[in-house]
Image (cartoon, rainbow, N blue to C red; front, side, top):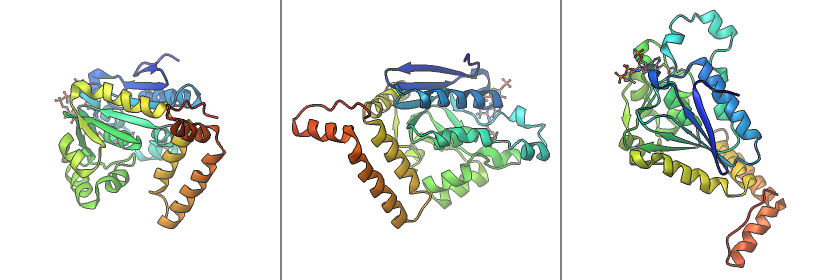
Length: 257
Ligand code: CO8
């Protein structure tokens, strides 16, 4: 499929999706979200892909949902056409997704970053939920994922006032895994994704599923869930290979079997 709003490439076992509407600071319109979903479907179906990097430009990861597209919308259509549901594709991705965020990650841009598994931030990154300034509110999970990530007090101030966080604040608050110099962001994201992509896909996917389960369940249920997945991994050839490689003092060669 030819894409108009994103760039899609592969680098070894890493799939890279670059949001690419530079004139609108990567504002997320319906066409872009549709293309993003299509690209994710393709990477998920490709056994040669073990991890995905989602990134934007140096100036903007994404400055939010497309305000010009949303401006004329009326409630009946937002409801009957289930506006926003297509955005959830990213959060349903089973392979790990690393968001490499430079510049603005605002509104829907911050929300799609938070749907990813790891956020690496460039030192110029800015995170915010400024929807309140438009007479609306976060609509793609922002009020929920931000609150879980940084706690009520900080999330409430951001959502109620639209205050944006610097990369350093986002790091300190636990929204991002770490901050790197802008010039190193892409290489660093590729390094993290490459490391994950070379591991056993089943153990990677189960680990992602198990960590995400922590947000949905009680501690006892979560621990039971983790234990079942842990035990299941002993049915894989990769477990034998990983442990044999350790005892034989060599690097593992996983086959996803
Ligand atoms: N939507 C549409 N166009 C945008 C958006 C956007 N979110 N952000 C920037 N643009 C456009 C501008 O209109 C401008 O276009 P033009 O040159 O044609 O006028 C171009 O991008 C460059 O922007 P600026 O000239 O404004 O650049 P500045 O450097 O002066 O400012 C800012 C950068 C601060 C990022 C500024 O553009 C801004 O405030 N943008 C809007 C940020 C915002 O409010 N985001 C939240 C949007 S609402 C949302 O995300 C709701 C999500 C809910 C779920 C999704 C449902 C679909």
